[in-house]
Image (cartoon, rainbow, N blue to C red):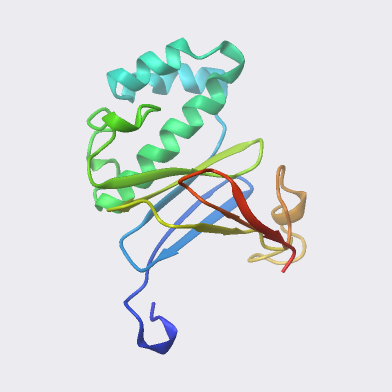
Length: 178
């Protein structure tokens, strides 16, 4: 990827999961992950792969929130491992990416992204937290065509809209429909 105007090189990461595609672009290394929220049985089976601190957080979550909590943990973890360049060749138990920011890997920003009620998504970048993140929802049919089961019919989608969030405050800065 080349940035218009001769700016610094751009990096990208891609992820997809039943009904949602995430593409992240940044002027530094970046990892992105998106996952459809797993079944309770999948949460139980996969929880053993988490860092012990993450396992404790998951166990303490109310039963009705465990799927979403696991989804956030797992997408943070996969985004981070993608940005490291190791993927799952580095054991998921190695790094803590739970709720306690002081325990997360030093010199990394790992942030949750809005992904609707049926998915979780996260990005990871080395260094400081980005000043802003822009999330753009594409219209139905992109990139697969009009008949594809993606886009505006996907749960939680906001076709054609843009949401810009400040990771420092979590507040929405702008929202528009193109």
